Length: 637
Image 1: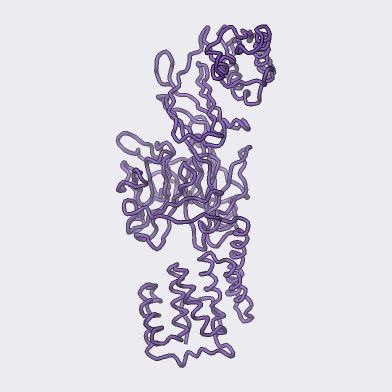
Image 2: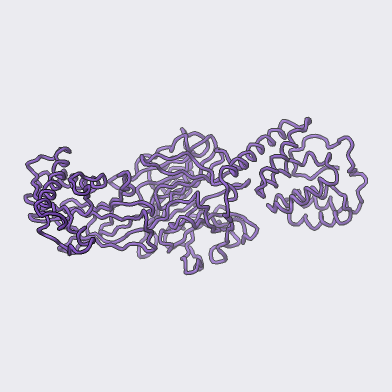
């Protein structure tokens, strides 16, 4: 008698010495039920076979083939616990007969996260001398994945972390498959892809309501759903752009290309192909847009990569066009497939899937973190139970850094893949991210000004985000908490704006709304440099001051006829004469720095005023801090 049909790896007869199980002595009624079950299994009717197999086992409790077949059926249905229970029941009947089943048994043990037990089981399997080359190769592959699971668990104990995915429910999920979730930074709009009939895929949206509920999903408005064959979708953090993969669209280059659609009052605009610098005749998909909309990550199988599908990045140039896509390199890409990149709102944590990096089998989810020099760290496996022995798909993490979304066909799926949410384990979380938005405008005319908005990490003076406002001056920029930032706004013909956001210690729960008035460059226009700091009782500039002074340098460079006077002020602590001297030295220190950077000394004056011109009460520390300031005044244009 044959064993269950899908145990393909058993390529030799199961006749073994000293076995106690004899298939020829099985009850004939049980055999009839078993053979009827096999007919259903041959048509992939796994659930329909279960009652017949159970009935066969009830008829003959020692029917090992039926017991082991039922164990395998539950494994196919990803009910690992029940599968293991039946495998162990079959093993108890005859350990010799069971030995070829150690491979599927080990797989289901690993499905439960029991990697040590799975490793012991696969070693038992590999000890069989009669194994075919194919079976041995399968066993050795599984052994490597179990060893990885054991090693990862030893290095990264999960502690009290509980992985408990929650189905988003009938408002989002349906009897069709839903996948590629994407959400705006303020959790207002949720978009995803839903499989239709045949090759059709459509884009849906839902509004996130209070208490983590969702409005009834609906087709996204506009022309974006006109063509039937689409794929992955990604919404920009500000909710203004949709980038997605489309197949055989008008003007496409071949296979799947990446397209963009813009939000308008009447719906989403007609999709535009992102052009030759991104798309090729090959497959491009899985887009993820950085929060400042200056970098686009995606996957492609174009020639010249490291494997089947590699991750690429394209940067938006000053003219608004996308630059040539660059392969993300061999530290990320492998001979396998890298897919589904997702750049978090912190602009520093990248998640993606790979079947070429060490993991639990099939595709796992990995993360990389961007370092001080904008270099990516080596990929890090997210570990069990987020990653399993199955294929893991795209991951999306909200701005709070802990709420994650992914697609899965878990047991409570409405049909096919459903979208689930879960809490991300602390050690693989990105930075919690807030945002600041507002309008840049002319202080005199109140007219909105298109401007450059930049966010700099104060610890290393590296630019974190660099965005351009829209034509009416509206801007949106993310603020990852945990660090201190300098926020600056530049516009040619205007004095710059600068402010510090100290988020390294305090983590406010609200976002920022900040309208920014810019002063035109004109005679006697002045600006207090809020973020220039000196050592106590010294004219020695602190390192953090260079961020703002370099903006002053940029202003002078872009306006070569501009002449400035740098003014220094102190509080009233200490003697007036010493304060006057200190304020003068500090103003001179700013001038000296600018001169070292190539600014002609003839364009600069400096003057100290000591404690003579307070702008606040010196009785409080907050008031004294305001009085200790540096200012510049336009003295010639």
